[in-house]
Length: 331
Image (tube, rainbow, N blue to C red):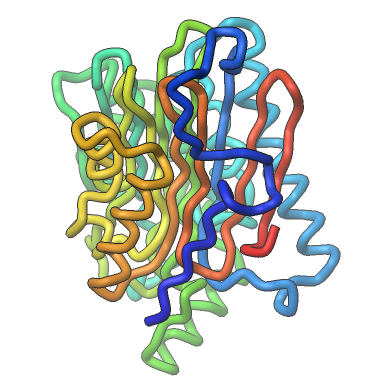
């Protein structure tokens, strides 16, 4: 495959991202910052109507504002990333929660993870079928159990025991995803859009704490029980104070094999890479194996990066200076 570094740090969007700036002073650092993604893939202007583009932009803005409301009031990065992804789980434009893709057995199986950079505590759920907002279940695992991950029926049962909002599996259904499933089963192949669609958020709060969250419905026509990278700490989600926070989206099998999120943070921490260098290296490994996708990263000083090797990525940023969103690789 042709590996395209569409690094937003080098593009017009959002100014200077992923810069290495050891001379940065406290006055240069953001008071707080939230970065989100709504999935990466073959996202081009030719394939987008003005109405659809406007809908995605509005949805990204809604998610940004939900997280920013937490951070503006002095809330934690952990609360902010959860708050930011919930509107995307509730929006059928994205492949997470309501509107998630379908398995080959015509069900919905959802994955999510969340991590707190303060103590590297983490929680995850995989293959849940009845939790309306899987990210809430992931956080409950982190805070209300001694474990890091629950899967399948056990995860649903745990979520229900915590009083979370439970729904019938049919709640997640949309005609759009049914049509996609039928096409994949008929053609026996997936497009990039069928493999991608994960949503996620990373944030730094007023106290310098970092957090990350990732949530997804997986890939269209996946085998029942398949688990991708999204619920795996170190693959799609990682956060460590003083280092960075990462949320990934892409072909999960490759992101698992590389351990993308932890690789990025380790390169920042141990090799002295800046955010862009670390993310470039990790995604190059993914590309060498045959995978594609992208990451959002935020550093301990508030610097950030959107880096992907696909045609586009739904993405956005908000801080005290305002909010910005983008979709395509050329912006």
